[in-house]
Image (cartoon, rainbow, N blue to C red; front, side, top):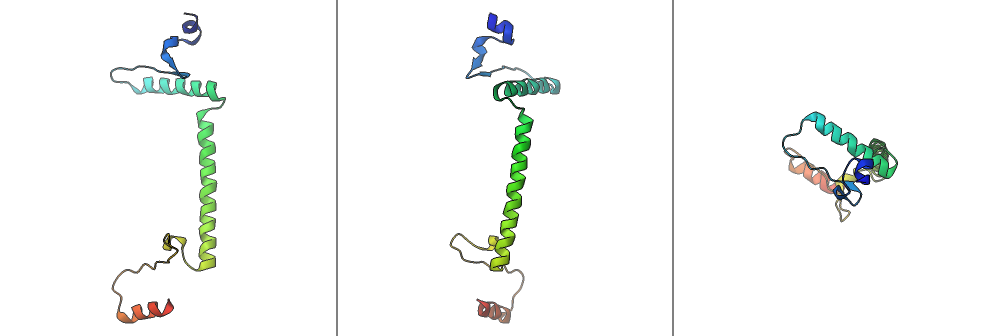
Length: 113
């Protein structure tokens, strides 16, 4: 009874520190927004930070990683003269050709290799 008075829900509704809320029927947007606000509060109480700040930190780190990847791909292309995506897992370089190629063009490509 004291737990329910203090936290607004029964102690039996708590499993591993998480409140389980049963819903039935069709929920309207307002109800979903209220539940989201409640979950955000519980997240803040448990982890000491808002869920949005963690998402923003993750997005920022992801953008830094993507930028580093693009820089690495550019350095690879500069050093080896071809795109890293044209190399398979065995280290073999693939050359993509489209359209109609005559025999002379194929022989020129073969001579380059």
